[in-house]
Image 1: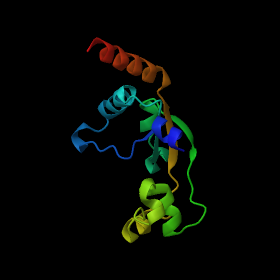
Image 2: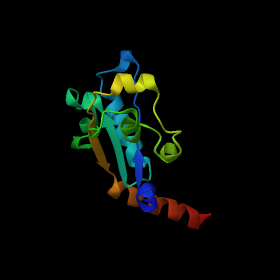
Image 3: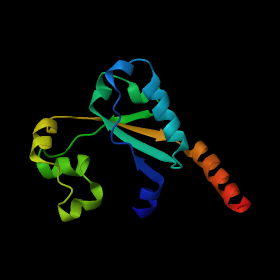
Image 4: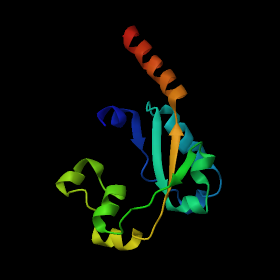
Length: 131
């Protein structure tokens, strides 16, 4: 799991001012940030993925739909909560968040950044050698 965590980044939120929505700025921005992240894989969940292919326009691949096996606060916290602190129960989502999201089935997306990650990594290594 440690190896996986060093190679996988979670994109948790993209918020765009209403004035700029629909202009394609956000999808271009998200794609470029992912390319420059230095991580080979970026994942995200989006309930709006059912009706708006925003992440697909940004270069993500739709993998499937995430569903909690149980409709409980604990099960939803595993999906939406802070994964690092879940074992200590600090990662539980709030009751309010659970009430809002308990029937959601977000779309799961992955961004394959391996080709850019290798470029970014070699550029960083070259910069270190030059200093």
